[in-house]
Length: 187
Image 1 (tube, rainbow, N blue to C red):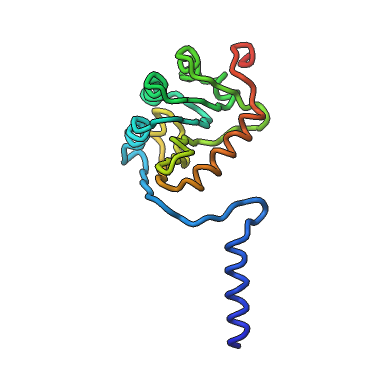
Image 2 (tube, rainbow, N blue to C red; image 1 turned 120 degrees about the horizontal axis):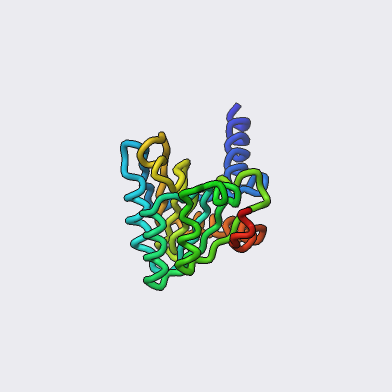
């Protein structure tokens, strides 16, 4: 029985240390900030994180209609931070209040994801190649409704460079399949 328990423990540790199906399993490090809307100020937490950006911000947005978040991204670009956005083409074209055209007008490079039925990611990577990297993710769309009317969750994960690099690799893979923003592409 003792040998069986030891063997089972070794197998469990092997599974935890081995990527399964291409997924990477990594240790949790850094800090976690959590917000639940409509009770918590998730939008304010994202804006505070963006104000701390020093080098780069990479965004994956299913929907971006929040003027405050668009303004924070534009302000980061104006401070000299590299800001690049991936957005779902269909939601960008349907969204009367989409802030994507304002980002493009401010010189933010935007690519539209067209490969998927829905490019449903909601991710911000802040300084992902730094030790102080931040990954923002959760169900929270970058919209007023997500803050004021919906039940959403938001995680802000700081200080886990390995996690940030994995998200950045995924962002780059998606950008490779996306098309540069153009008005013609929206029609």
